[in-house]
Length: 252
Ligand code: PGA
Image 1 (cartoon, protein in one colour):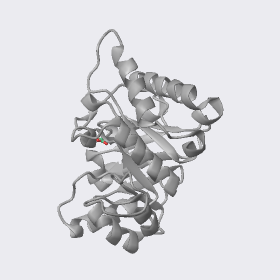
Image 2: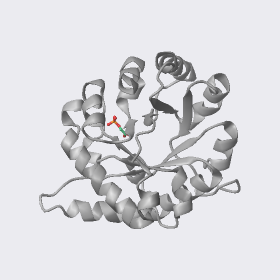
Image 3: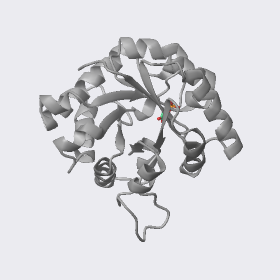
Image 4: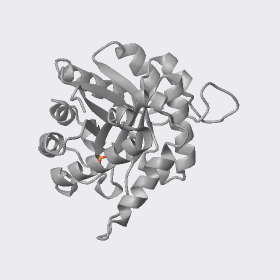
């Protein structure tokens, strides 16, 4: 596939603890990445901070994403939910969907597929997270992963794929250090595997264009090798995105 722009997405998760710190972190990141042309940088802060950050810093080189969105596109009696349309109207362009930390709290593939569909048909780019919890030597985890991808994309059509990104995040590699992340060879293997699954589902024309990211203990020390030798289209960065120097180094 064409190596257009790499995508570097920061997932701040439930950090930092105050809006003041969120502004400070955002300013630090955006200052350090303004001259980067080869990658698109997306920051996904907690929903609570999105409005303030978008109105204060929207229009800079950094784009915004949400960490989740509702299955309901517009609005209604859905306590605690945030609709894709609300996010879109605010100036948010991306939504992470189906992160393993949400799956661990009970989200199913079926629910996640509905969220992806709601996001993409509203004009948000959905970043669908997939990844196995553990591996076995016989490779049955690959079958499991294929099923997870297929089920999380049920009802998502070829036409929707222009707004779809898949982030491969093996759960066993999340929240550790670079030493515990995958090797570039392993990442490349999984990139090709997921590509095959997407091409099988959507055909070459569409399936080959969907960006595939890697996430799980990305740090400045392993990002270059994972990008160049792993062949992925970008990263979803967790803990290292909370340090503006580290995150800017990865984006560069
Ligand atoms: P990590 O998190 O970079 O801290 O491993 C990645 C993620 O959960 O998206």
